[in-house]
Image 1 (tube, rainbow, N blue to C red):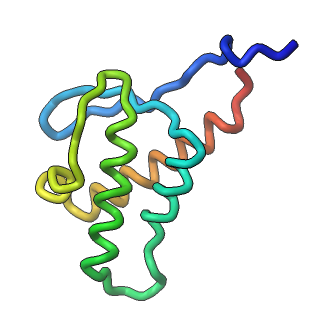
Image 2 (cartoon, rainbow, N blue to C red; image 1 turned 45 degrees about the vertical axis):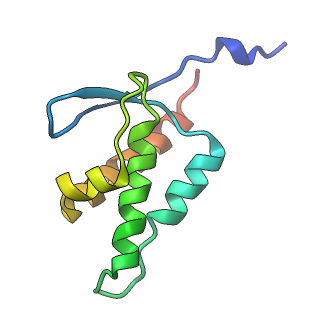
Length: 105
């Protein structure tokens, strides 16, 4: 019998700009779909205000799924992180998700 309770959770360890270290948990499928949808950027060279809002919401969703229950709002993400940091985080975050998806328990 396969026992889902024995699954070992892996975490994305991250140090925030304020120095706090959080362990981001893998997202549930519903949240992953939402983060992926929000983080899509159109192929043109200009980011719209809506694109930026979606990116900051996606990052806040990812940040908030952490073992320490540390909460960060989209507004706080927008105030403290620049676009390059957000895009870099999302790139590393999705690479991490792909890597744990390909690992055995």
